[in-house]
Image (cartoon, rainbow, N blue to C red; front, side, top):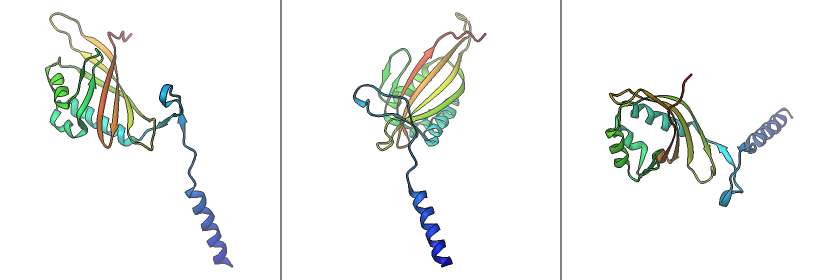
Length: 165
């Protein structure tokens, strides 16, 4: 009888443990995806963006390459778009030397059954003073679409000339 009771309790525990917990969804979507809601993403996608940020800070573009799709779609805050990782590197290595503080990241997923997550990250970017201008501080928000361990697209948004007072 004791063994039967233990077997019963184990069966109940397994049954309860195998039940799917309700998914936590948030927000809303309009248009063709109106029936969907956002889901919390994963730490794995955030870790990819964080790794890329560290490599970007040291300008190790070749070490960044495995984290990006070759056909990366990169949209800058000024609206210009490139469609390859090599074009992305060319833009980065030709620009002004800036520094930044990586302030936050979170991940959301519109359809977890399909794969791919949107990692949203925020930065305070400092452009150094030059002979022609004073130091400028911007706030950048970046939206990464990460799928199968690779960044498929990166879109930047900027709030310029932030008054830090």
